[in-house]
Image 1 (tube, rainbow, N blue to C red):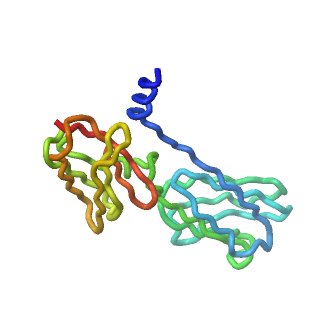
Image 2 (tube, rainbow, N blue to C red):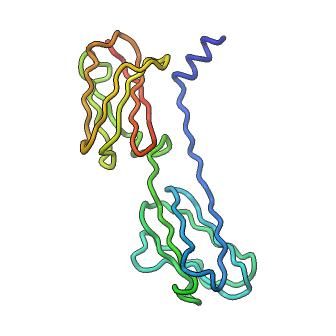
Length: 195
């Protein structure tokens, strides 16, 4: 039973596609510091904290377009899910940018849930001598490690200013290995077969 569990853990794919909702208070005089940095797919929810009319409206130059319209009432909420990487300055049309404004910065996390990060390619797979990795355009530095399925590290290589990495796997014994690419504090692991 323990052996079967180990095999399931080694070959299983775990993905955390969790998205987060961030809550912001929104009221007259809050100022110009209502800023957040969030990940792609996250939601921001503004909650009116007074009875005055307000809006949540993107400013010119914002990556995304969003507008609550002018709304009134304590406890009124407006939510928006951000789907593009970039900077989104916003304000209240009624009270102006000096009195009520902020910026939502949306970043593209390099993690298991990020499709562009998981799209790195390995070829040829299976391989006998050289394993090539082609990385997405936004990944230009990090490191690559090759492990056995039991977790023993066999190779490690750092890369900078490149979108491709070549690994010499000729000295590895035949078998199944895990290749882990790490960049920006995140990682993704794929399997390859040495024959």
